[in-house]
Every structure is written in C-alpha cells, then in structure tokens.
Length: 94
Ligand code: SF4
Ligand code: SF4
Image (cartoon, rainbow, N blue to C red):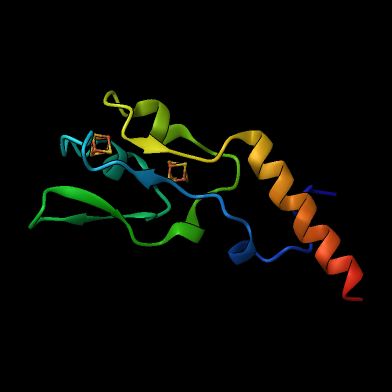
C-alpha cells in the first residue's frame, strides 16, 4: 500500500515553486515535464506552475534540471511531516 493512498492529491503540498529572480527563461523545465505542471508565460518569458497537483509526489526532476537552481520543492522531511499530519487529521475525524 502506498504511503499516500487514501489521501487526495490536493491535500499534499508537493509541487514546484519558482524563484523568478533566478529564472533565466531557458524553458528546460517547461519542455521536460510531461505532466503539464507548467504553462509558459510569453509576456514575462518564464514558466508558471499552472497545474501544481499534476506534479508527481516525490518527483523533483525539473529542479535537478534547472541549472540556475530556480526551482524549489519541500524537503522529504517536510513531505513526510505533511503526510503524517493529514493522516492524523483523517483518523481523528472518523
Ligand atoms: S529550468 Fe530553471 S531557469 Fe529554466 S525556465 Fe525553468 S525555472 Fe527558469
Ligand atoms: S517534479 Fe516532475 S512531475 Fe513535478 S513538475 Fe517537475 S518534472 Fe513535472
């Protein structure tokens, strides 16, 4: 059974956050992600996280790809803490 089973995706705070001060608009992340998490903002020449919950929980490939370190994710520890909190809330409301 998965660690995340029974938890709706929208409750899990796992998605990229972009630091626009560091982003140079290279499009690597936008071209790489097949899950349509990013939309391209032509006016500002940078990606927008338009579908955050399409991001695969635990994936951080685009952050590793970004040579400017402009993409951030929560740490694994923060992810596990969030999941545990959600599980506790769910079981206490039953
Ligand atoms: S890979 Fe990094 S620098 Fe390139 S568009 Fe994405 S966030 Fe910006
Ligand atoms: S972490 Fe993976 S699924 Fe999420 S936006 Fe980046 S490439 Fe897409």
